[in-house]
Image 1 (cartoon, rainbow, N blue to C red):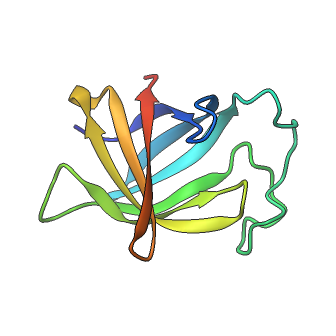
Image 2: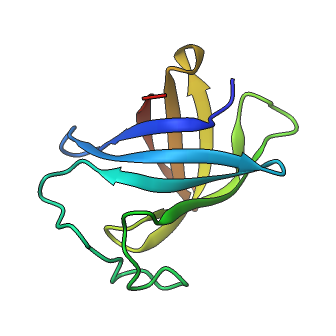
Length: 125
């Protein structure tokens, strides 16, 4: 099952819907772009002022937040090797994606060193 599609992200802390992220694949590389912001407290036109790379001060809506993800050669059910950006804090995490529940959900795990956090995203399409 491929992670390609449109996914609803859920905030770890509040349990509220945050955004819709579209995952695309080109040449075996997967990337994810914020297609819609769902959190009513997020201001339209908000920019990533805490980003430190080429995304600094760019609009969060339409931002490519996931880059360089590839299907794992040893475990084809996993997609990793890339990075994901949290526009709220400007931090970049190593990322691992694992489609679950027949592809209806996606476990998105972000790593810093040995520590990680997992979110479960819901497939919209």
